[in-house]
Image 1 (cartoon, one colour):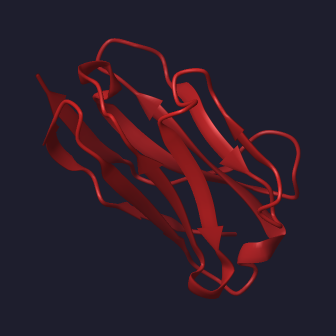
Image 2: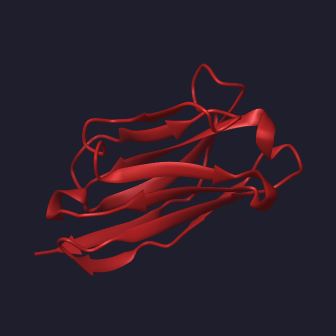
Length: 119
């Protein structure tokens, strides 16, 4: 079991940057691959990015490529999502997720952090 707590959301203007953080409980952080999803009002939840247990493999959705970067710090049990050049359409609740090993569904979800981008 792992518990995930996100932070770093907020209200920013278009073009600004934010860095989301997600801290995982427990001492087995490096056995979990991590990721981020988001859900905008009235839309389905969508995948944003994922990172392997070792951090050597990163996948970013088309909506994130070139603007967002996922990373992780094993010493801090934390995964990050650096978001640059934010757009109004990035407004959503962002969820941190985790799964045991590097494949399969994400079994663990955080409570989410709100990101609002104004024009």
